[in-house]
Image 1 (tube, one colour):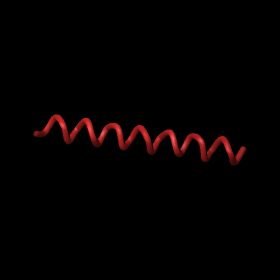
Image 2: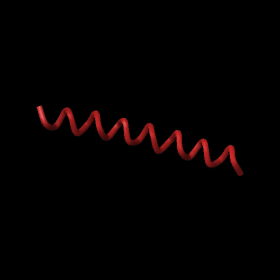
Image 3: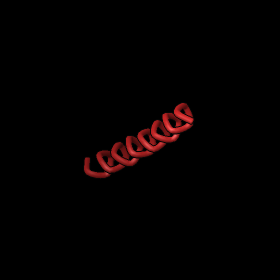
Image 4: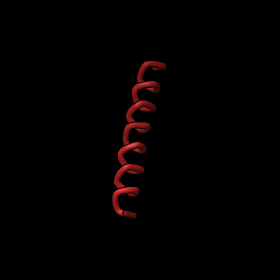
Length: 28
């Protein structure tokens, strides 16, 4: 159902954000 899709999308986005933060921290 739609809510499940949203939840999955949200967790994927959060994971991606974490990866980006880690990447940026490594650059500094």
